[in-house]
Length: 133
Image 1 (cartoon, helix red, strand yellow):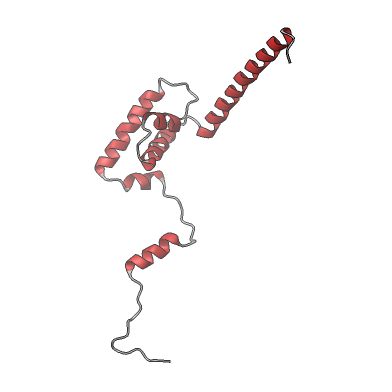
Image 2: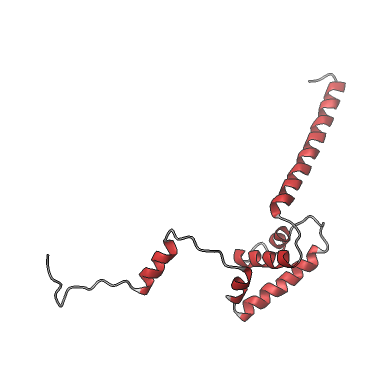
């Protein structure tokens, strides 16, 4: 084994390498809470989030009671950053719960299926009256 000399490099972990290892490691981290997410924003970002949340709340009063905030936010602000849309939804859900997006989508799919079934039943009844199958 060689002894390290004056010119041999000394291996030390730099901050960038350590940060990269932490970022891609298998350690499970706890998700940040809503208050932690809000505290990490600068004043301008926080102001935008809160003003947008007010606008979405006002728009929600015009929509059906079952339409979730996430659907309203997505419809109103499709090009907004995902993290902002998510935070707006969480803020509004925390203040006045309105329901989950999956429940709303399931209800919409069920309503759609019922309309399709009625339409197909109507076609089948007309076809049988005309003697066609």
